[in-house]
Structures are given as structure tokens and as C-alpha cells.
Amino acid sequence: MSKASADQPRISLECAVLTISDSRTAANDSSGDYLAQSLQDAGHHCAARALSSGNLYQIRKMLSDWIADPGIQIVITNGGTGYTHQKSTAAAIVPLLDMQIAGFGELFRHLSYLEIGSSSLQSDAFAGSANNTLIFCVPGSTGACKTAWEGIIREQLDSTHRPCNFGSHFQALLATQ
Image (tube, helix red, strand yellow):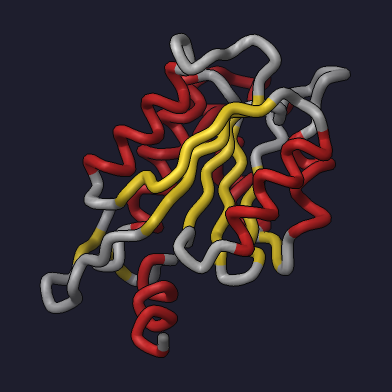
């Protein structure tokens, strides 16, 4: 399924992980732990990590700080994307985006459907970019984080993945700085 090109250098990206939850703490944030470790295992650096309640403005502040930081290239959020009255991730983040990556949500829901069936319909997973920062927003369960990471994000951050990937965009951007 994945194609890699040996003639392209693999680049390491500076990343941040945000867990959005009213119940998770640093001690029990298994999804944030999984994402941070997966980034490291793939050769990237988890430069920042935080927890936030579902407060719209706290989420926006944290994301805005990371978006404005030229040292952060990738943000992965987990949580706040389900169909509940507490759903706040999209409302907080979408207004900050310069561009949405429409296919991410569809592909995530397809992969999720293969695992959990029609319940995948309730996921509001999405991705986009703001100020040269790529942002992936996935559900908060560790299983959903694994689906997003293993099925989409890992390959797309790999600058050797072909025919295309997001890592190469950052490689070109870094070359001009």
C-alpha cells in the first residue's frame, strides 16, 4: 500500500499534541501518550504537549500559540469530535484554518467504518492548515488515534512516501528559511 522513495531524504518534523477532554489528566492520557510516542517512533519530535478542557477559547488560545510558533509544523488534537453536546473541537479550530483538507475526514470515517461500522458517522474528524502549520483533529479514543495515525497521518508525514505527502511540503518550506 505505501510506497517510499529511497532517493528522498526523510525529514523530522516538530510536532505538538493536544488532548481535548474534561476527564483526562496527564496521568491517564493514553491517546496523547500514543500520539506522542508514535511521532517519536516515526522520527519526528513532539516539541509540545498539552491538555485542554472543551472550552472553545482555551482550545483556540493554545492552537493559536502553536500556529504562530514557527518551530511547530504539525499539531495533532484528539478529543471533542464526537456527536455530543460537548463537541467543541471543530467550532474552536475551523475558524483558525487557512485551508481545510476535505479528504482527511472522509478517509478517516471510511477506515473507522471498516473497524466499527456505522458508528463512524458520528466522528467529526478533520484536518487543515494555518500559517504553515498542519493540523489533524481526531477523536479521543486511543483506538481512533491508532486508526488515524496508522491509516493516514504516519504516511502523510513521511517525506519519502509516494506519490505525495505533506512532509515534502515542509521540506521545501524549510529549505527557503
